[in-house]
Image (cartoon, rainbow, N blue to C red; front, side):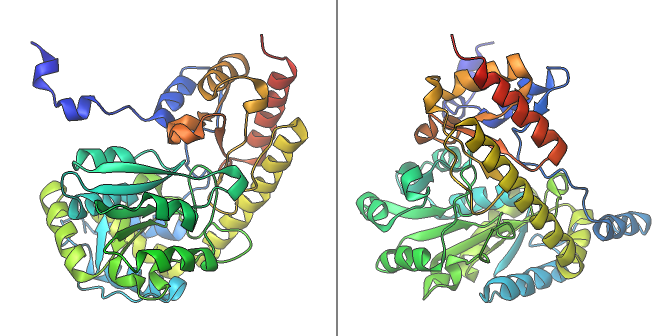
Length: 389
């Protein structure tokens, strides 16, 4: 059997996730400390788990409507309004998805025709460009730089807009850099976009994890709501990664097309998770705040740790990652990470897994205990002191 002919050339041409590659390597090494996957080390708050247990005991495990439980869509609508003041009808402008990742995929497929260009700020989460390619679109990297605090600038954006530009990803707070766009910066982006027909896919999965100032959504800026798809979910803020639940909010004509794809692809999101998510949104704000405060303490520890080692490290303003520069070591990102995991049993992710502009950096996730982080920092320091030959 010639599988090269059988399989899609389109799919075979995609690169596997660089994050998962190093996660798999880490799993094969005894006593490894893996700081490679963006997964909270907190347990899902008990109220959420208790609700799920009750749902199972009562046998409430049937399909829901394609768009999601009406109660959950209403809770999402109220949550988004409370957090951002952007209003969405739970009946026609909210869709419950299988994690934020499905919401990203649905957004792209609902918007993109073959040949359409999508501007993708990089470094960024690994799925954006592959999903654009799978939809027949053309990802256009918008390189962000450390000296600009890894923010998308109006000057960069203007240079990349062409007659073929259909959409812009806005992935802030950012994975892997921890960069955040504040209100004034979003207003400058909005001023450019409002003069075009460009849609915005605003991935706000880390919206609860900003340090210093609350999150601002571009959907609440000017007239942007009419062209923005807001994507969020429960994995990061509520420590619900395995529950696979996210949501999208957008104008009704967009949500209608996204729901159509969702209907044929997955039918509905996990029923038990949906019931539990109502409790998450309505009753767990204190737990979310406590987790965010703990991440902030870890953030300060890790940034100081890398500074003490002599590695330049941008201080993240959101999410739970740091993105230190390893250029001073003379090693490339992949070589650095490969040697670190093999010689010191610490797994981090090469920066170029998040786009070519990430070369010379590594992503370190600090969603782990202070004990694990302290031990990992010590091992990394020993690795640096050993020199490179």
